[in-house]
Amino acid sequence: MTDATTIPRLDARALDAGDPEALARLRAGVETAGFLTLHATAIPRAEVEALLDAYRAFFRRPEAEKRAVDMARTGANRGWGAPRSERVDPRANPDYKEVFDCGYELAADDPWREEGLAVYADNLWPKDMPAFRATLERYQRAALGVSLRLLRAVAAALGQPPDYFADKFTRPMALLRGNYYPPRPEGAGARDFGIGAHTDYGCLTLLATDGVGGLEVMAPSGDWVAVSAPPGEFIVNFGEMLEMWTDGRVRATPHRVVGGAAERVSVPLFVNPDWDANVAPPGSGKVIRAGPHLKKRFEETYLHLAGG
Image (tube, rainbow, N blue to C red; front, side):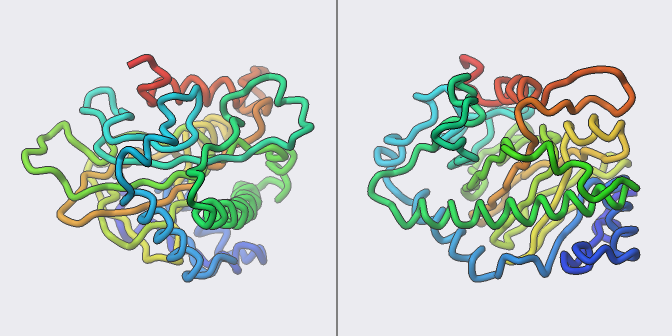
């Protein structure tokens, strides 16, 4: 059963070194829990706390200023997302969080720019917050490095060469998101969530949080189990795409945020392969391109992309 004791806490240095015991615990986390926590990465706690402060400063701005970078006026997930602008669980009400998204940008001369791919859209930044942009871009680079090293360890834990995934992440569809969850509203009901029950769409999610509880993971029994980590440590989970890509060896586990009396800020980095990567199960003879698969899932979630 998945519970707080079966979600492994792993040392990034041991994984980088290929320590057999660490890789065995990683394999258990990947195949059974679908979640783990990670410490001793290359990202210091102070950098995570600075990132959280930057998001708080943005989310506390007047709504009119945030609407200047509202993703609802774009065809992509870049910029600010207003409360209740997403619904990840169609059985629930729209999520009552705010978000700010930025992602991997293609080089100016990259031929894929001509394709107009929304998952590589240019980022949308508040013009009067240069430090906000610099903080997010610096963290995104560092967090992507941590995530790609973790994918090397995942490959090794599954009995593959460490570089098994490497050539599929040359232009990763990586999305950095800041989530702001206000205190749970008075009168909230059984269909109201900070984010409803869902599995992540892509490969790997590296989550930094402010340490406030709220994230819950579904156990095989159907029970919900709380998972948390302090700033400077990370919660990691795996998504539908990696589950499919590994023919079910990696588990994509449902999770949700109910919300509580305190506000909460969390920062997931969603790490996905290049647009044209074939993520079909090995040996299946199928071709499932990562980009179209991810685009479809985004359109089912973002109300401004779904037309709702």
